[in-house]
Amino acid sequence: MTTKMLRLAEVYLIYAEAILGNNASTTDATALEYFNKVRERAGMPSKSEITYEDIRYERRIELAMEGQYWYDLVRRSYYRQQEVLNYVNDAQDRAVQYEYDEATGTYVEGDENTAQQVATATAEDLLLPYPESELVQNPLLREDPVTYEFLEERINVFR
Image 1 (cartoon, rainbow, N blue to C red):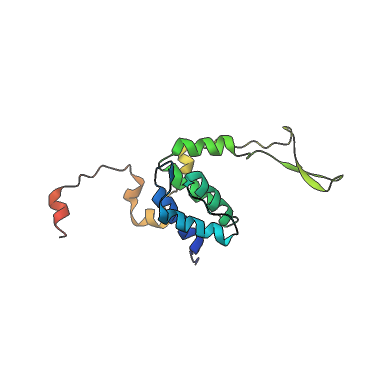
Image 2: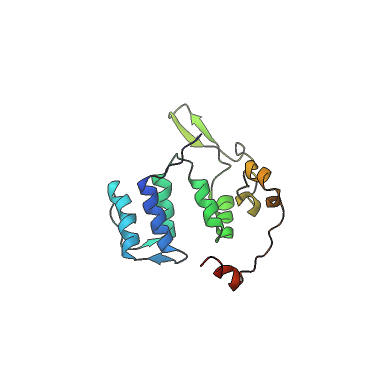
C-alpha cells in the first residue's frame, strides 16, 4: 500500500492557486502570505503579485523529482486544455537527446539526427482513467455520461 502525503509547501501553493482561480494575477494578501512562505523558506525574495506562471514555477521547483508535474498539467487542462496541449507539444523539448562530450566532460544537446520521435499529445492523453477496481464494481462507468437535472424537490429531501 502506498501512503499519499502532502507537504506543507504543497498545501500553501495549492491554496494560493485556488485563490488565484482563473484570474490573470492576484495581490490577495492571503495568497501572497502562503506563496511567500514557500519562497522565504527557500531564501527567495517575496513577491507582491503572483500569476499562474509564478505558482507553476514554484510548484515545479518545490516538488522537483516527486512526480507531481504531470498531475499539475492534467489539473490545468480541465479548464485550459489547449494551453496545456500547446505547452506539452511545442514548449517542451521532449525529443532532445544529450550526448556526452569526452573533450569537455559535459553533456551537450545532440543534433536533429539524434532526436527521438515523440507522439503528439492529444486531449485524450490528459484524461486520467478510472481505476480498474472501480470499473469492476460499477460497469456503468464505462458508458457515456448522462446529464442530471437537479430538481428542487430532490435537493430539499436532505434538509
